[in-house]
Image (cartoon, rainbow over all chains, first blue to last red):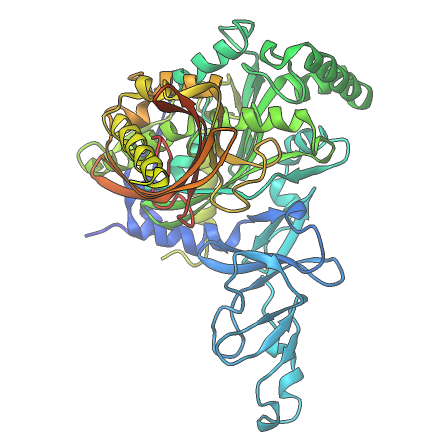
Length: 433
Length: 163
């Protein structure tokens, strides 16, 4: 007899305070019932990232995206306001926009010809005179807006739960680290080009764990480390790096640590040449002027791996990237990755450095990310043996079971934070069977 | 045989040999096909594939330094995504001479590349565009631009080989 979902969620985390062990049931990654429960709870009640304001530069600009399986239209309306609608015709349900991106005055449904403004209001109902008076102008003819849609510093999120707490409250302490990223720009941040779009044949939670995991870097990514040693002619410090891994609450976490690579803002390496040193020293000085020495040092020479539960990663590392992943089954996710850069870098060599740094590590053709794909897909394949070998171990640095909120950079604090957030979210859900 | 046709056949032979080196994982020899100031470019799958990699996000935008490092990486057992090595086959077709300027040839081809590994087979397809410079009775590659025609790298999940 199968245990109920509620019991499986309760038993997914196994903590032994005496032995200071923290384990995860591997069935939690592969079980299709757990996946369905996650979609009905986590992905229907948490704030989910949609896009960055800079992606919609002008009125009428739009992107269509799949968020938790729902097709949505992310659009800047004719008045300049950013909005988000479910991409479904109020009439008979066809997608009113089948383009992935573009600029338009209106969305036209191909099925029966209804059309809608970029503000979602219905413009045209076919054969309007055959309906009752007022039918074609009633509010329920309009496109349906997502229940909640809020922004923090250019990052737009939706929530399918109309009663959710505000985005600001949901992000909580994570805002400090978002600020520390966004404040590096003098004229604001913008995305550069289109996102890289790839996938993984693995459970989405593996990528959530991986994105703030520093422990794997030396073992999984030695070929990247070889590259940056070549690039910096050995000037990069080896050994222990200063920094911490931190549980930010609500399943969010961050690892902030001394960078082991050049950073466009603002840590110079020899590969970039002497002119760049002058430029980067100037950036560092201006950060110091604006934010003081301590914060400027963290902004410039430390990296940040930030996970916003459940599926947004803002990694301010050798380059700045936004990564979001949409599970479509227990064993598959679609991943989108953007490069983010300060507006003032447009057309400069600084942007070129940032993009080169990006491609050296990140993306499906980088010197590191393909090996993450390999490792996580191999985990997922191996989890088929979850009955015989049931537990993943996340005990590293689990010193204080009662106050496990901060640790060394390579401790598994962020992964434990994620799983506590996961369990809390599922257990609080009323709809859980 | 007219000289245009002969040039096309010689180029086609060159591209088939290039594909064979990659299929056989003879990457160092493949690297020797490039000039010292070469570029190896794979634009992102969305957007203008000819926009400068200095201004927009690519998949790969290697200069000669990064290409040499990429080849070194793929030769290591710690390039985990390609160790154990995937089995691959590259089919090259639709070879055309697109132009000639100062003895540099601009060449286009269509390709299908199969990659098989860990129980999965993925298909990559698109077009290659080359700038070839004469070197004795053959050429060196000054630029190779691979324009992938899939909508996204899904379900491939990676571009860990040279397609």
